[in-house]
Image (tube, rainbow, N blue to C red):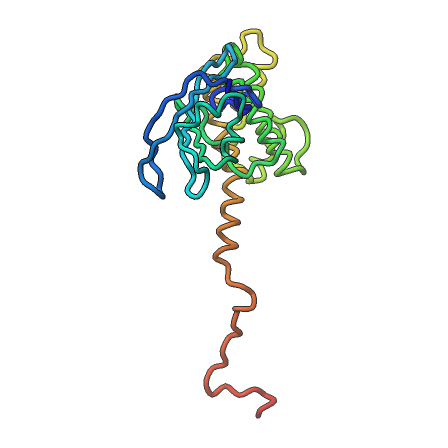
Length: 248
């Protein structure tokens, strides 16, 4: 049976052993050759709390395998998608139903991205609202520590100091406090947090991380691309008729 070791695109559990449960022939659109015959393989996530499936569409790569895609079902037994790709076929993942996650804010430091990804995984799991809220809180706390290590104390004080110094606008201060409070509730309160509150924490954390980390990186990249090279700078021209003291 064909299996694929791959992160589930739905629950984001790492290195899941996805099981193939169906192979059908189909037409696949390619830029190089237009529509051509291919196969679609359906893989099922083995997690009882997920159970979603994804499709892999496979066609011949131009100049690759000389075998027909009709040979694929036979060669797929006891094989892997990686091996099939190496054999000269194009393998394309089609996530279906559409993945539940939006893209993670770009350019996050490792500690921040890890906490955010953990929160995202917990967010879609049943009865995991508390660890999700705690994860979003940890993501913004790690972001502040990475970006402004000069701030000290508990997260509440760090957020306040960034607001007082003008490094965070008032709205961002309020959002950060909201994520902090929901994360604290998830970790300490008996009632925990609701699904709606987790979605709020996620939205606030996403906006906060993009403002604090992603946007400054993007602005700096644009600035470097548009900056005038030092060697291209020209000295101010001397006005016509101006004579220096040495020349006079």
